[in-house]
Image 1 (cartoon, helix red, strand yellow):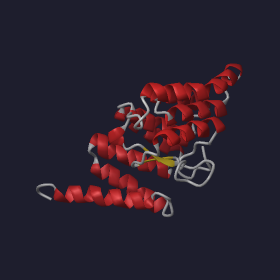
Image 2 (image 1 turned 120 degrees about the vertical axis):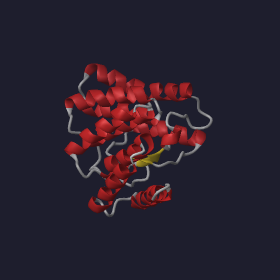
Image 3 (image 1 turned 90 degrees about the vertical axis):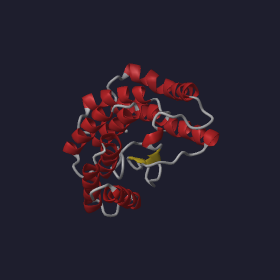
Length: 216
C-alpha cells in the first residue's frame, strides 16, 4: 500500500493505474471522507486519494457490479500473479496486488496480500493503514482499530493513520473524544497536510454534535 509517505504510501503501478482509469472512465470518481495515503488527491507518484465514505463501504461504484470489478481486478492482476509464483516474497508485487484489489473494492483479497507483505516488512505503517481501512470496509471495526494502533507504533504521527483511526473511532465506536484527539494530534504534527481542511470540518462537526447533546 509506501510513499515518501505523504499521506498514504502506496506506489502507483501501471496495472493499478490502468484499472483505476477504466473504473473512472466507466463510472466517474467517487468522493468521500477517507484518505488513503495520499494517493489520489496527491501529486506524487505515491500520493493518496479520497475513497468511498465509511457509510458506503463495500458498495460498488454506480454502473459496476462487484462481480465486474473483481473480474477487472483479476485481469489486471494476472501478470503480477505470474511473477509472484516465481518470487512469492517480493514486497513490490505483494504491494501492487494489494493496491489493485483494494482499488477494486475487493477487500478480502487486498487484506490477504497486505498481510503477506507485512509478514516480511512489519514496519510498513502505510501498508498497515491501508489494510486497517480494508478491514473497516469489511465491517470489522475492532480489527481495523487494532491495526491502526499497530501502525502508529511504527509511525506515531502518520497523518493518514490518525485521520482514518479518528473516523473509525467516531463512526464505529461513537468515541468522539478519541476522534478529536487523533485529529488534533494530526493538525499539530502535520500542520501543512493536504487534508487539513477536511480535518477541521470534521472536528467542527464532532464538537457541534457533542455540544448539542442534552446536558451539555
